[in-house]
Length: 289
Image (cartoon, rainbow, N blue to C red; front, side, top):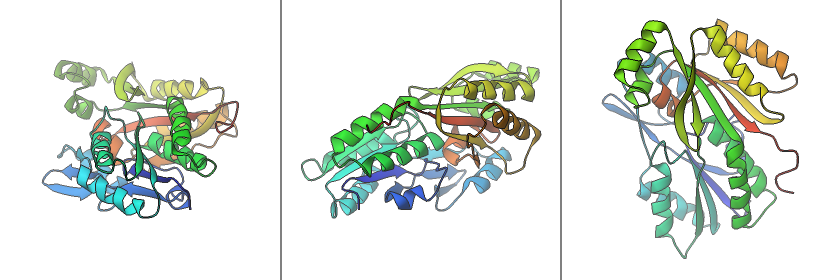
């Protein structure tokens, strides 16, 4: 058993689900409100059911963070076996999960060393960071050293998405009503990226072919890729997804890039028709060295 235990939240999307068991990761569930019903994310509702609900357009999803008391219960339970915990969570600029985790950690000050880390990302980006943290903690025992190495990993995580409809990003305040109406009339598909933990509109495309090209160009900018995932809103092999898969396979030969349904944490921000890439940039030298 690792001397440092890892905690994350259920906004994390793992390319390899066995990571949770392999590194003894404790996943604290967020709640998701859809209409009058609240679900535990990852337990009561999964990606497929969530996407079906929001693609109908009759509900606006809302993520609800775990309370400080819920985090405290998790930390106390882990503290029975260890006295060092690293707690990795979705961007503090996209929700209050980090804030509540930090509040709970203060309640155990002097009893357990708990480092709450703002991942500055979400979904597969957070999953990649948890994976790297597990690898680091398998070789490093000291919490401060682990945190230092994890923080060095965060700037290497990138995410870009395009959305086909603008209603959800309007609800989230990324664009105004006039932009939504004009963009819909012109068939514009905005691109969003995560910069320093904040979702920001970066550019736009007018056709699926343009959108695919922009995503492919984004991936081709990296000299080295450690991990990459293609996130989409459907299990069907649509023409844009097939085009993107073919282009990436051609340009990045030998690079794995699993295609995954994105999780409700992304869907609650971007809606039910986004497509994107999440990339963990590689390093020339081993980060632990």
